[in-house]
Image (cartoon, rainbow, N blue to C red; front, side, top):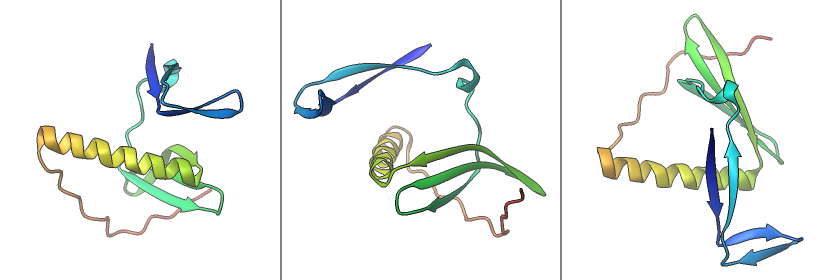
Length: 111
């Protein structure tokens, strides 16, 4: 099972950025990731070079990190823009999404 990703107007080719051309990349989702992972909480931390997003399934009295994604600051900014665009499209189709309250309990990590 695969998805296709198109990107443009800028892409990197032969050591140079080429403008106003679209390329296609086939993306394969490994079988063990196709089901996805449900997360109802996140923790975001960062260094100068990267942002670390821990997606968690928190079910008191414990919780589990189900996925960790590490992004560069530039990739995170594009990710945020993509999320905002897709949320706007979702709200246009299905109505305004109401933000949920921040959990009142403290979450800590154990090793």
